[in-house]
Figure 1: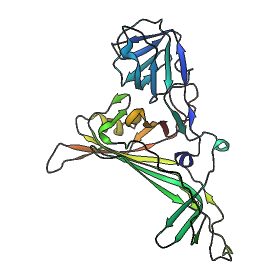
Figure 2: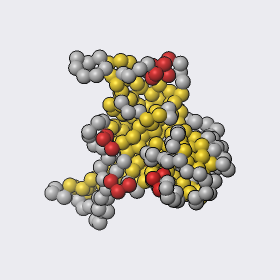
Figure 3: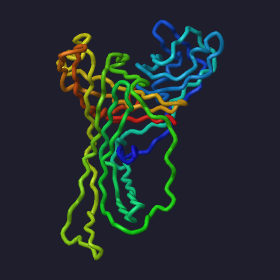
Figure 4: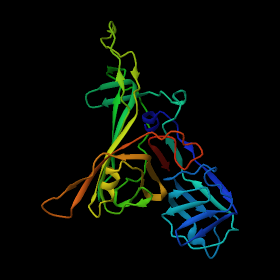
Length: 321
């Protein structure tokens, strides 16, 4: 569903084994004397698995998010690093797989699916074909389950008295993501006072209507479901601790936003946007509770990202399962 939404394919991320990596407790960073982090394909917001550190620095092994990145320095959050000189055979692997919007239109997919609703008690099947997932709305609130709602458009739908999918796959047994097991990074720093995050990926699909499409069975299928421009926008609510976010909005500065949802058994998912512009920063003084502010944003496409610390996409999904 995510691949259909972003018109791409999940692909394995960067991995490397280096003996030139030292660690520093001063800024919680890994430092490569070979300056190979950028050319190795690592990106800001990637969640990486680190292995290979030996005693007395085994605490450096674990899963962490890249907060900032240069050719020779990778600042992390998620593990508390201890200082150790280079020499260990350190493996740094982008966990799971990553999906973004392909930069070239020719590299984008145009997948569609068949979706059936079968009402067993009355013997009615509704079979929608040519279905595309055109948009997705994400919501994460404190102490609540994270949710995603997909909008679907189909070319055609037919009814029948018997089911089409006679042996559907069983529901996948995985953990439910929740707001109390999440990590949010804004502009290279942990955002610890965020009270909610909502964002939408809109694919702007359009069902084509044509003259003379009435079929003998009474259906009127569309000629095609056309793909439009992908747009990403959202809102963050946070406690009003200082004026930094307002100044970012006022000065039209661009920031990075990455959101790491942690599931059971290391099954995580990450959403990250490398070029975000704020559209507002409005205080909201309720009758009770702390003073909050509402920050709207748009995620823009970052062009020419090859050889830099950023992914070449408006949004990237990293799935770790």
